[in-house]
Amino acid sequence: MPEHPRGALVIRVLLAEDMHLVRGALVALLNLEPDIEVVAEVAEGDKIVPAARAANPDVAIIDIDLPGKDGLTAATELQVEVPTCRTLMLTSLGRPATVRRALAAKVNGFMLKDAPADKLANAVRQIAAGERVVDSQLALAAWDMPDCPLTDRETEILRLAADGHDAGQIAGKLFLSPGTVRNYLASIVTKLGARNRVDAIRIAREAGWLSPSG
Image (cartoon, rainbow, N blue to C red):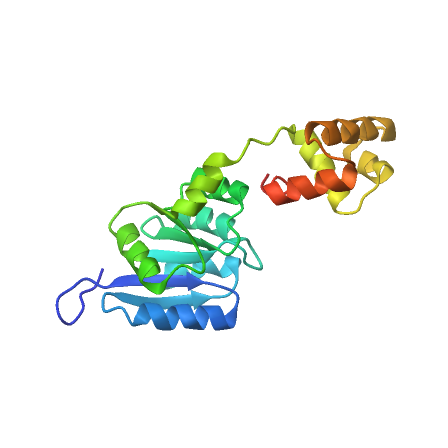
């Protein structure tokens, strides 16, 4: 890290956030810190790795919901492509399943987007120093979340149903018979304690079990 004129090390930050006003506010707040400098900012997930290669940041602050490529996928790629850059994920919702995915991906930090500015700055410092920072609310949510009771095949079928496909269309996509698909859907409803297929989709969505990465 380069030195501040007064001798302190300056932490170089890349910020990935698609909402212009939020990104601008975060950049302004972080640049007020004497030991933090935002050296790159992007609005799309697929621009994170190229920007990190060019700017060589110490910490990347990444919104988990980004267009082009989701933040968690981009963060995983960043760990491989620019291993010297550590990652702090931001989320506005904090779904338990998303927190678990982030922890499993070994990101260095995970915080709610509406955290106070001083808390965010301190998290950046801790992560730059090699520590791992996870918001206590998010950690508890992940800890309390039950595991998904569905098999991979059941999850795939429910995801297709959630996208609006009927049993016949799902059968065609997965090379199954419509009867087999209906049996799977009945099993899914039972496992989730749902009233019907629509209720099963709601339950799975709220738990984060229908995210693209599982």
